Amino acid sequence: MSIRIGTRGSKLALAQANIVLSRLRTAHPTLQFELVEITTAGDRDQTTPLSAGEGAGWFTSALQAALLEGHADLAVHSYKDLPTKRPEGLIIAAVPAREDPRDALVAARKMTLKGLPQGAVVGTSSPRREAQLRAMRPDLEIRTIRGNVDTRIAKVDGGEYDAAVLALAGLRRLGIEGRATEIFGVYDMLPAPAQGALAIECRVDDAVTRRLISAIDDPRLRESVTAERSFLAAIDAGCSFPAAAYAEHFGSTLKLHALLAPGGRIVRSKMAGPAETAAGLGRSLAAELMTLAGM
Image 1 (spheres, rainbow, N blue to C red):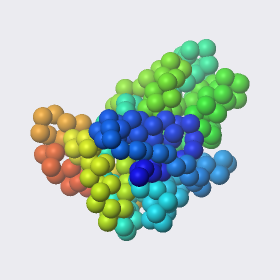
Image 2: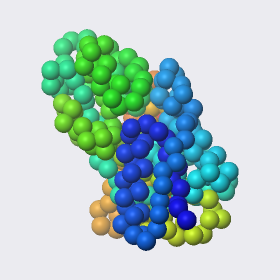
Image 3: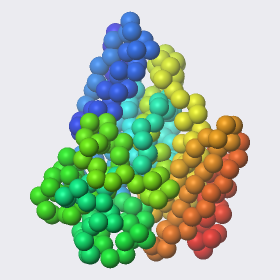
């Protein structure tokens, strides 16, 4: 018997799935695992801005359907792609160790953000990144960019863009971290909720697979992403709304930093509380920021 791992077929998705595969093989050396590639709406549509799909099920619904229909036993998701509203019959059974959550600049001629020329063209499809870029460099021309990581970097190399902003986690998982010409501080360019984290999903009623997956779960990271995702769910403003959140542990305390950027105006705050209250912490900070933002 082989445990089937559902994944998208992109280079990055396969890299992520292979990371999970390796960890599961280490935890369960006597079991057999195989990857099952599944095409999603986000893979087929290469024209709509990514912000329209991230967090809306664009990259995840086909994988979830494969689980529910019995074509896969578990699925590997980039956690930030998952909708905050959970489908019936599925559960996130593990959140393995997080990759670096920071954003990175990939620019021509090894330039940093500060070194880019006046009016430089920077590619991103993230309203969150766009708002923070404009706050740091109001003169930049921000343009939508689509495609996988390699495609976006190729557009910089080809001169279509002077630079692009990408998740450092993706660069690292693909082994091309060296293409980053600047890595932003986590509080200078606050990440998307759950950026750098993976979510391993399976059927609620599949007790055997749930038990197997639990071996690679990181409980402390689960608390962090619970706070970040609860913040996002409480805003309930749509997947394309510019919002960011990042939580980290200080002993038994969880500190959550977050921002909203309605109309491009950045409003940010932070809040701390016991780690076991992660979900409530996210909701409380969301309520505070929505009040400050006049939402």
